Image 1 (cartoon, helix red, strand yellow):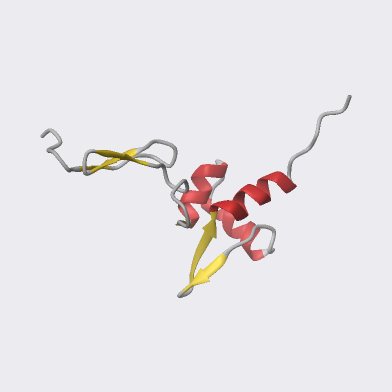
Image 2 (cartoon, rainbow, N blue to C red):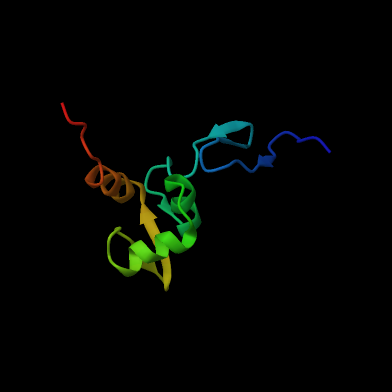
Length: 89
């Protein structure tokens, strides 16, 4: 079965998807979008349990929405920047 006009193709966290014959931005690249725990795990190449570990110890910023964890793209980028180690020399 091929895709019809206006169909939806699921992409990965880093690949765009086709929505109504337009390329949509990858997960986390849409303005104001809240990311899910699996989205963040894929982005950081970590397991879901590693993300839970970081959340439990308040090492990574998060938002609770109805008891479900969500993350902002800007918070995750800031988290990555805080962990950056500059080279010597």
